Picture (cartoon, helix red, strand yellow):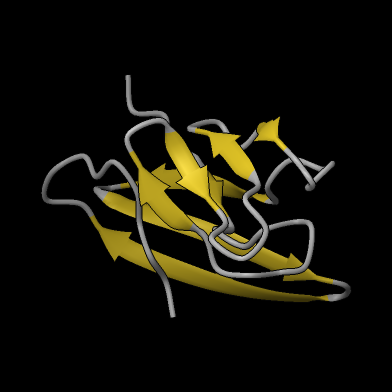
Length: 88
C-alpha cells in the first residue's frame, strides 16, 4: 500500500527547524521531541507537527501546501519509498 505523509519539520514551539533522529524529530533550540508521526513526545512544544495532504498519481507524489487561500503543489517522482522528504 502506498501511503505517504508530509510533515513540516518545524518545531511548533518557536518554529525552529527540526533534526531527524532515530526516534523521530528533535528541536535543538529548546529540546522538544516529536515521534515519527509528528506527535509531541517531549515539550516545551504542545502542538503536533503540521501535516499536509498528499496524493499519488502515476508514480508522482503530490504534496499540497495550503496557507490561507493559496495552495502550492510539489510533485515528486518516486524511484523508491523515502523515509522523509525535505522541501525548499
